[in-house]
Length: 278
Image (tube, rainbow, N blue to C red; front, side):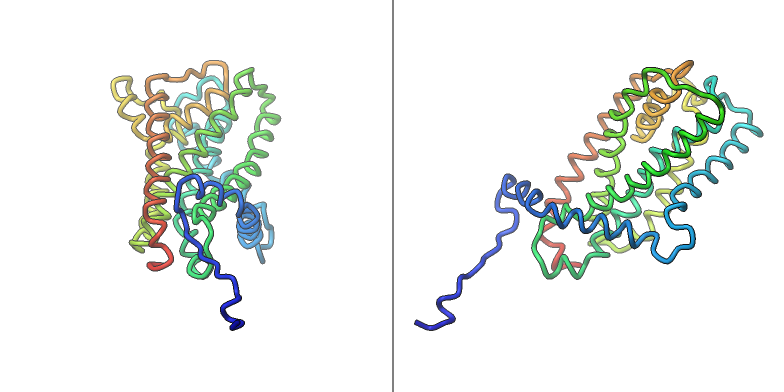
């Protein structure tokens, strides 16, 4: 018998069924850990202060917003120190913004791996979101410091914070999958994403409370999915006078779920072409 005929032949058929695809994600979990850990190390490699950048950037933004909106514009702070009002919104926004930036470039940055080896491509953008989530956790130290500085004690609502973190994760994942897919096909998105992040910062209630928006416009304002996410964070962290605008929150929640489901669907549809296009 010819030695070549005796060799087993391995045929990889990616995504034959949805069930197999999701099983593959679990099978390739070690690759997920590797990509996430590698990106964490690379992000702060050869920097003088390392992970402190995850603290400095949101802290400086919080200071600027507190001065502009709190001290100069004298906007209401819902009965809490203005820096805490701002930073309770900076946490989910920074997580979302970082996820968009990291996800949009994640497939391009792993082009060599994607073009040579089969694995569920969903692992790549998910690992990028997890890296941003690590920054989110590190930045949370600032919020704890602010609460200690102002002797501010949260109420029982803080126990519901994981729910709003999960919603923020879903929003980041959904938007990230859309941008990751589109950036492979249309490289223009590498220039569009920074604009989206910058523009989104000013139309989201980060430096101010969403209560300053006139009542008749609040539901329309909630068409921005991050409005509900940010309001949820503030409601759980601030307590006291903070109130959750339920119609707007549920509208934002529905849009987040739509964004996540459509993002996964579009990513799966485009996934089979990544290796050829990238």
